[in-house]
Image (cartoon, rainbow, N blue to C red; front, top):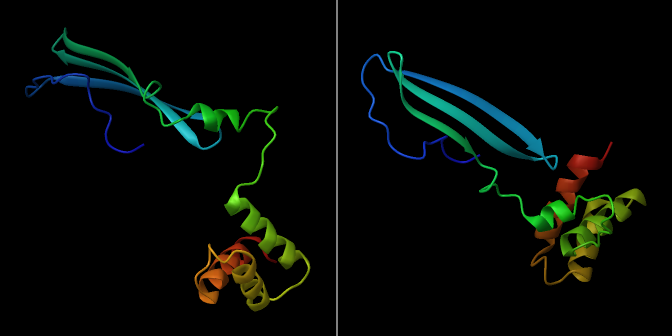
Length: 131
């Protein structure tokens, strides 16, 4: 989460005030979190402010992203996926990274301006997936 766990409105604080915060983070969709934080501000025994807040309504989870994680969704590769599949397929056939880079530049000319760009992409997958 970017930023801080702010309050809904400003609260004037004095020395001796007590702030109690209960913070929860719930993993959603495998890589996103929804945060909830309950805050109570006390001056002695008197509650000056109380907040119940969450990122739920402002969470960066889109319906499209959730739909793509549904068990019934039938995914189709986008261009990035096609490129990765091509690289992984060639790696699986034992082709050198230099040759993969040449083939990438030929097959996806709009995506790789130079052979070095293609080699960088293939190299990243090699680091991640090769033995």
